[in-house]
Length: 603
Picture 1 (cartoon, one colour):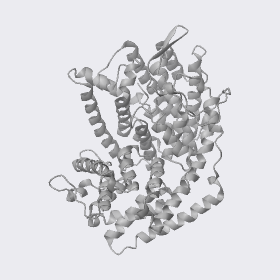
Picture 2 (tube, helix red, strand yellow):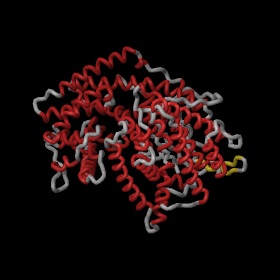
Picture 3 (cartoon, one colour):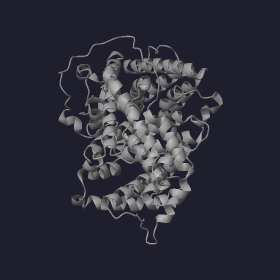
Picture 4 (cartoon, helix red, strand yellow):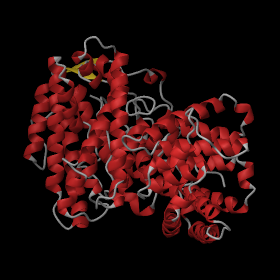
């Protein structure tokens, strides 16, 4: 099965290779993918030592080392830019104070919410944590008295929930008419559209059994799609904002990705920019984005050198997506203190993908058994009897786990290596089971497949140790984010279901017979592929609501750990939004890498 991947977080380790190899230099130009690489993966076979191997025919690395190393250093990490940003942060803090000086309580609440919304959309919220907390404490204190118009109610419901205030979706009931429409108290067409857009965004932060949220989402989605058909009445920025929010909903709207897009959206909104405060906020957002992006250049070069020096580039049968994975880490956080997180994010992601490709397609059953047994023995060097491609993988994986455990132990104050080894043992057992199903042409029942798939999704192996490097967590609370917690259960389950709905056809072409769709159709012979997808998408939606609830409830787990764990699953959703972005990164993923990592914003 295709890897359902959740990258690791906040590890400040570096994988060490024993040998350094130089690759053939490539032209110093932006990489161009050969036309033949754009086709979807197909089954291919090569014979090596009498072993017939399957491959996914994955396209080549889009970001060769010569190109990455030739990228010039950006100037925005210079002191003068940081000093200018600090001055602007002070000015915006004054705006927060002014937002609390409105004449009425209702205006006070709306202005505070709008300030929080603007700085968070533009990716600068981390500079105003105290101001945001004070603003939302005020909003929550007067919430029942003041949420009397749909725009304020929708905006407040979304923001308060995301900051873990216990607010009920029942606040929306008062705005629903008998015909299912929602009533918006504004006479301006643009004001009405913004109101319904806020309703749509709020409806995505839904918990199980919230009928009003389902109704709000259905209504607002239909409304916004109809508005897009009348694009002649919309300004360019509003058109772009609606399109972006419909395409990148909350589950695929990663922090840095949202910031990059809203900088463009607000930059084209003439009426919004007529406000001098908004101009200041936007300028700070642009400057802050470029300052953070200046951190990515050396990180890009670090990850590219690691890929070369570890010899992983020699494994030409697998997906080479280390740069795309660095984008994932940067899309979650660009803060200077999280440099180690971003590097490790990319490294562990790349290794998890290689292991997935080995077990899914390339390795023979005998080789996979040997690799699994060797890993469980935990030898410091790979056994001589393993083929060379497995030795390369084993060494990089072993060194990475050791170093990540050392980093985690520094934070936690206790040994964490056993947690990582147990997670990887369970993962290898799960992917080994799937390899045996493939070899035998066996389709299990849906329950058996899904239970095994939670482990083979890779969620534990790529997040557990890294999450333990974020903040100190008592050893008896680890299970709140690890197996067998409900959060972990839903995490792995939703990743497996989402991946299968995107990759099952390509996997079947490669000979991977078992998928959630195939298992469902085997149990329901009268059903079609469309029926299976409808059922699984329904179950996925229900499980995602449960995951929302687990994520946003206060249960003693440090919020930063839950935030990054949840954002890992959102990264996965971005990769699988339209297609299997792990296998085909030549389209939207390539664009994301360019906008987040390569191209600075014009000031």
